[in-house]
Length: 186
Image 1 (cartoon, rainbow, N blue to C red):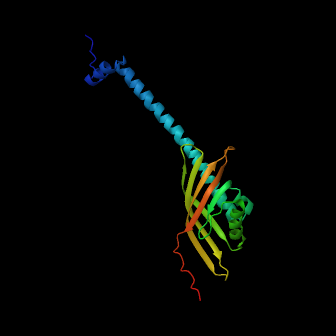
Image 2 (cartoon, helix red, strand yellow; image 1 turned 90 degrees about the horizontal axis):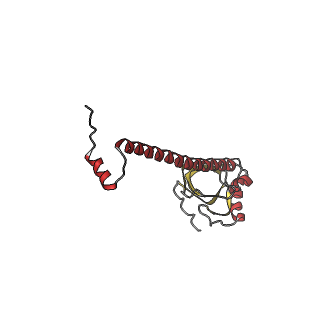
Image 3 (cartoon, rainbow, N blue to C red; image 1 turned 90 degrees about the vertical axis):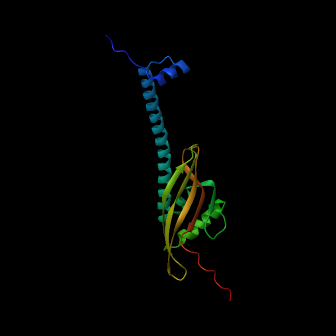
């Protein structure tokens, strides 16, 4: 006597409703294959995002190193041709000359020590826009020679160009320290 295979009523109803013509083992194989392909596709998509995010993280770290070594030309090279810079306590800079002036003034101070580090990197689904935020530290001597230490946060919007390089299109930063009181007019 042969054992009779008992089909689940739910599976029988699915077959009856959708007329899938798949027997139970085939359904299981199809389900396993579908899940496996889905996981592989997800891994490929995540790996792509991770690669772009790492490229942005690396570009941001190299930019910090260039600024830390006071290399003006290299520091400026990370900006796109139409970049916008929003420095703290200063007017917006939208031209190459205005952006260069900001960095020239900062890097000209021989006591300047500056660095920043990304804490969050995201790439848009389109793959051509990225967002980097993080923290910075800055130390410099003021006009009287007194050391001034600052720390704060920044946000950068990066654009992927046709040559596949990333350039910063928008850059802004501000201090975590409380604002000092304005000087009184005498």
